[in-house]
Length: 79
Image (tube, helix red, strand yellow):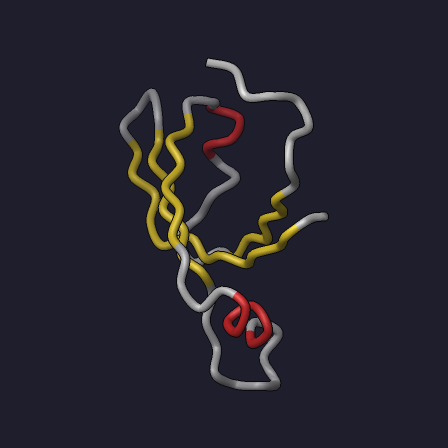
């Protein structure tokens, strides 16, 4: 089963060879908003991603909204 979340990019810190991306859960109390159901299911969430892939740098912009889909990886975790 997949679990979805909708998050907004709060900030991107550029350190040259890597970037830190900070995302927060979207929120809306307006029942007509497409974000309302996400706000009810996940009223608070935050995520920090450190990205070293230059091709991925440009994918994250402050105030842009992203859909995340979580699915369980079937192989065991390795160290």
